[in-house]
Image (cartoon, rainbow, N blue to C red; front, side, top):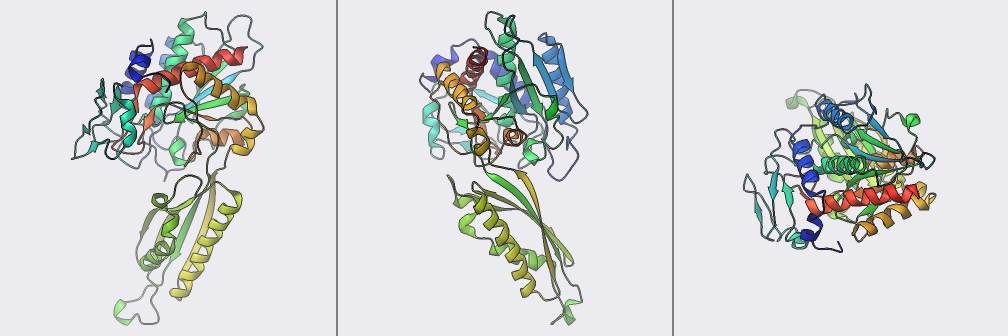
Length: 419
């Protein structure tokens, strides 16, 4: 950030964006990756319907919420700018299921003093572990209480978007072209864009508010696959099992043990991909493993998928009579190739962030967003910071000053697209 957090917090959006995040965070919207229906959980409707009411109360007439919980609202252009290109602002409703997301109790820490923030369960957000906290002295931080995640991923993005929209509507002197506001379910499951009504969009570009530190603009992400490993064992009384028994549980354990530890999430960073054995379950006759596979490079992804197939054959060789079958499911692709074809989309958000007072920077997303899927569908969609930190964690927190910077970035972005 170019300015101190306390200076940014003096801007007019601070109270509104903090209040919105607190209020949205209390609404449970945990998604369920084991459910194929969209939305995967009924709780996501509660936040979606609240946002419909809020958008209408702001004076937006064109607000729709379809049967799959996709919310799209359209702001008309300022008079005389109806012919300017439409752009979309996008965030997701759901939170991850990695840790509890019900009964969230946000805590607001004003004028942060740089010391450890004590939470429940003996946990703390400690600058000895998270060195970046030194940059947030004097800021207002919104934290979890330690019993749940906070849900700033992506309710900070929703709060930023709603605050920017409200400001535009109450300040007609801020000129802008047509805008679409898009809130989606099930981003965390990887399925959220499967039924998205992309043909109904009018925008030539979109921007997801689903990144972290102030100034962060992301235009490169993983290629992502989920590999489901179905294991069939061969059961017989263990007392008479010699040469006849194939224990599916032991087969699953053997499979996971052969996944390279040096290529796990905890052993990689930057542009290095990984295998993540996300779940394992089973008994003697049947077992199942889900492996998340990530790589920035197409050839790297091909190699990883082939490695898992070879592990399946190796396990079958270890356990005669057992079977191991792998099924691949593409989740999203690296969006960089498509975004490189639309350089003005990225150039405008970088300029907007700078004009708002941020110091824009880019780094690869070690994950993905709905923006990656939308980019695949033909609408270039880079990812924009919303001030969230330690997401998917009981140690999650958000920076109010970075959320304010994000609001002002969106206001500058709307102006730039109207020029």
